Length: 69
Image (cartoon, rainbow, N blue to C red; front, side, top):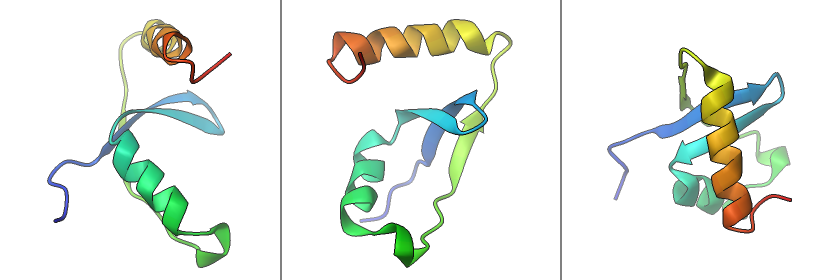
């Protein structure tokens, strides 16, 4: 069943985004497809007035869940 909602991200740097909605859907695609499949994912990128606060909070949650050092 297709998802109604998109994968939502906040840009952390030029080369990195943090996914805050749709992690499971993204992980499923990473497990199935290889880089040579050239699959393009469309995501919704959110812009906040102060991205650094949001990114700091997201990184804290990632660390608390053992997903980041």
